[in-house]
Image 1 (spheres, rainbow, N blue to C red):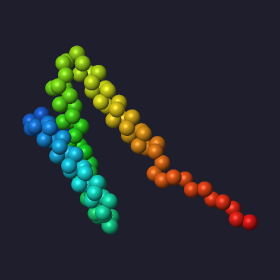
Image 2: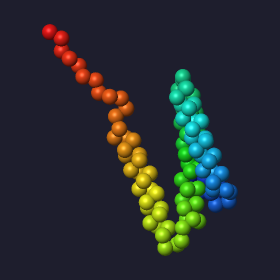
Image 3: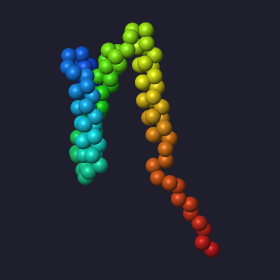
Length: 106
């Protein structure tokens, strides 16, 4: 939902400012999520996380399109998206904590 407004902002405002604002907002929302002690606080932090994260994608795509010649834009956007997907997959595959072995005591 926030992506619709973020796309418009990326077209009319400074893209670098939107990226910096998105990263700072994402960082603050992540910290708030870690400090949350109630469902309402978790929900508010997750909403802020999603909204701040939605600022970065359109601004990054627009900035990449502005920074590269037309013949390379498809390749650059594909590479950027692929790196993002690969990083997300690696993060999902990483164990959150080491496995513990249990030893039977006789």
